[in-house]
Amino acid sequence: MKELDPRSEAEVMAERQRRFEEDLIDAYDEELEMEVDDRIIDGPDSFTPEHREARKQYFRELFRLQGELVKLQDWIVQTGHRVVVIFEGRDAAGKGGAIKRITQRLNPRVCRVAALPAPNNRERTQWYFQRYVSHLPAGGEMVLFDRSWYNRAGVERVMNFCTDEEYEEFFRSVPEFEKMLVRSGVQIIKYWFSITDEEQEIRFQNRIHDPLKQWKLSPMDLESRRRWEAYTQAKEVMLQRSHIPEAPWWVVQAVDKKRARLNCIQHLLSQVPYHEIEHAQIDLPSRVYHEDYSRQPVPQTMIVPEVY
Image (cartoon, rainbow, N blue to C red; front, side, top):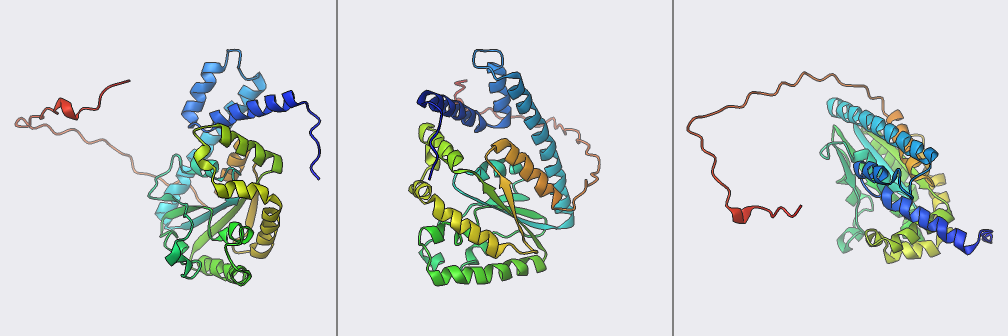
């Protein structure tokens, strides 16, 4: 039974408003977040000194870890290493935010994201893993799966999109599928982002009231909220039946988004034996000039209006 909140309605609403404003700022890119902080740092809505220091520490660590991710990327390219990183968790658990911070400074040709939509009619008749295989990395690539073949163990199971036989076959197949990938040289790292019932409710409410985030809410998301306990049971079974030495599960405590991102990136870096790659010095070549070259003017009708 859910415990009654001892706070008054006004206190609850004030807390939700504070969280809404935090979540709104958090959705911006880091550079814009810093600008927003600067604008309100001395105003009536300024953060406490402790809050400001915590945010500074977050950005310092984030930028440091992103620098390490660039080194990891260089090492992957040079060695031809292949990495698959799986991100699973409830709706609004923070998977997308973590993926964004990982890929933000990286080359999308080296580190790419696979976020597959629901299978079409043709794909439903294929071998279950078939549509994921084409997204696996080649040598020198890292692929981040924003949800993965574990859809069958989660949403498909809870929403009755698969039969009991298909569900059981998945758990018979997935360990062998992943072992086969590992034997072929693909490293698999699997993360489950864990949030509380209350935290998911707050994040869903924020999406409802933020016009820039309402697109993130689908009828499936709303139904998943109602079936919280069924998702919990499905998650527990998934972790138990697919946690194998070759590709273990790692649980990220994700109620605090910023801590979750930093912890996930730090752990990801620790799972790959990378080191900094020496690069040859880059010298910018001199511009070549030709006397007979004449730059042609661009018609004004082709110029984008300078509104700003």
